[in-house]
Amino acid sequence: MQKEIALLKQGYRFIAGLDEAGRGAWAGPVVAAAVILPLDQIDLPAQLTGLRDSKTLTPKQRERLFDQIHGVAIAAAAGVASAEQVDTLNVVGATRYAMAQALDRLAISPEYLLLDHIKLPDVDLPQDAFPKADNISLSVAAASVIAKVTRDRLMAEYHHTYPDYAFDRHKGYGTQAHRTALAQHGPCALHRMSFAPLRGLLHLRYQLGQ
Picture 1 (cartoon, helix red, strand yellow):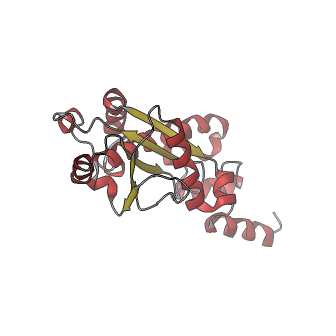
Picture 2 (picture 1 turned 90 degrees about the vertical axis):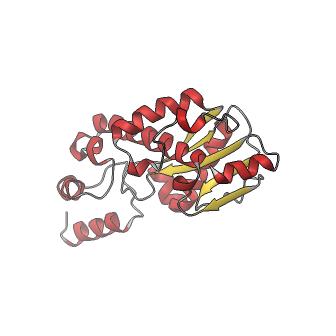
Picture 3 (picture 1 turned 135 degrees about the vertical axis):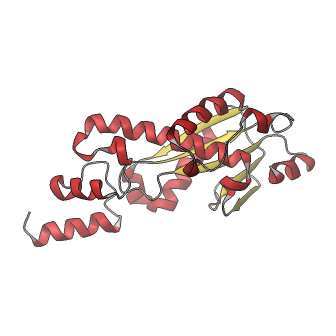
């Protein structure tokens, strides 16, 4: 929380952490989240014990922290960019779109943004984007959990519409099971056709006349 503490000393009150989930997936949306925590509460770290980068947590831990974050946060919101938007805007543009959407949905307007890697040039707020922010900033770590759980739940719902792909298990990432399903069934509406593995698959199917 060193970043947040330094900003609090500068007079900022509402500091939003932002992070995304799903940038590297072959299918499904990019989901971003924005979280404003009550950083002046001395016991905040204790209330969110175990909170860190969502990728290092188990699904059960993420679900528990998802509820705890919503219980303690001043404001929290998520934004979604579809697979089609990833293809149209590219993955960085889609991530920025989802982050801007999450910011717009916050119940309280933030005064400063902390982000993992990606800045938002179209958002007129002071901001700091830095590597491994979800391991350094409690606010960004909270956003990473909200984004990841929200996206995982969406992919589990999409499984009912597209059961051939087992999205509930691999969440659209490039696992061997996903490769096999693509080889058998081809892409569906959730697949990002601009991604190299999908372009290669289409090229191969065209060569084979399928």
